[in-house]
Image 1 (cartoon, rainbow, N blue to C red):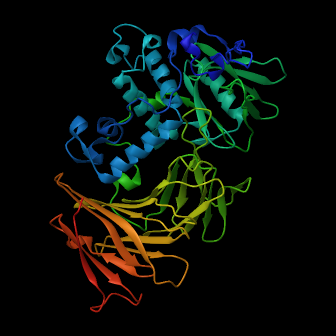
Image 2 (image 1 turned 90 degrees about the vertical axis):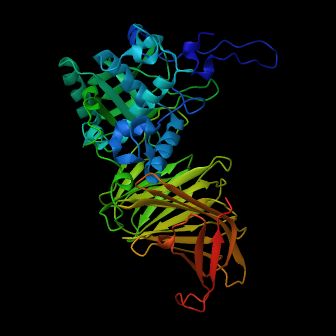
Image 3 (image 1 turned 120 degrees about the horizontal axis):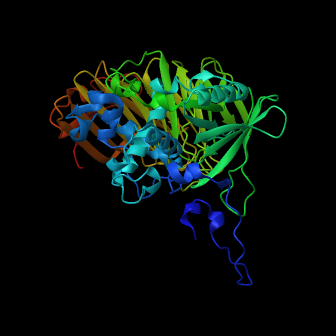
Length: 532
């Protein structure tokens, strides 16, 4: 089998009951001299067997600001930077199409040298992905550029300047005539996004239509067509079927979806890591009263619905789509594998929000992150069944979250903060409760105290069991790590851990307010020792 069609499961031979192989369906699109010469001959891919971002790429993105110590290849990332890197890498499990499209154009521009990836004077079409870590990391770096405002602000259509399909294709035609090269991005209504290389724009057979000819990394060696109907102000992409036993997966949009966009390759060049806008949770000091928040989800969520303090909604729930929250903006992470339906990353003003989660796959972990200046609150390793919904509530002006489960989930609640002196990360993993439970946690950096509690929806005398991990990374690169497993506290009690007084890495004090009337001398104080 010609491995250029390896992305298409359709290219496999399917054997029926009569043991006779059926003819494979035709590959998408048509043969393309451009795609054979300038495109990669391996298909778009996920995260199996590859290396994505490392600390070196993080410094290429954001400079030494992300390092607690060292720089470049010797950089020790701050906990929040390390967390952002790992989360971004995980999001690449949905594909690397944006990085592959960007690299194709940068090779054409001469901004990337194939020799740097082990192929001498050969063109990018000869590059292999397998066992080529430099290329894998470069494509991951380019993938991450779609999160950088200096890049996205230059996008015309969805990420930056809002534009309709008609305006986007007109922008393409004018730019191509002026010698520009473009990455074309488009997003599916039900989640997920894709990025391809624009080869040309031609008039369609139907009146006032344009055929945008593209190289799609899901189809090596081929060119496919996205159709824009200028009169109807719509777009449509029909080449999304990857298996012979499912119908074509048609992607489409209109003048209201802002789901089609064009990004000139020049936006990817000349970036200064020292000046590039860094994620606020990574590079800014702790400020729970900061103006904007970012909500990011990773994993196969069936739906994510955000509700603000006034009851206004943004997201999907019960088969409906809501866009009621003022000033909310969404950006899809474009990976391009057809089964990627990840919800977009949301930028929201500071307010109280409740996030309702549902996932169709109980065997696939997911995570949710709420980030602001100098802090990150997350729930990771979430496993939800098809009919299960969990809720996460975040407070206004505070580094506080409440996680409500309906079954015996054992997800990990993570709180991280950046200060001028040191960076902190706290992990609480509950042992779970068959009846469900509520976990509340808050970081008070001014007092240097972690507050948390467990509730079981009943006035019971039972206890919650959890594991605790604390990580402090000083500006000098010194790391103190504390771990204690099997800690038990009564349901309804409030717990305080004054981590600001912690200086030896061997033990922490846990104060327990049994009555919920404030901490006093009569409440128990427990010394936790490091058993990690």
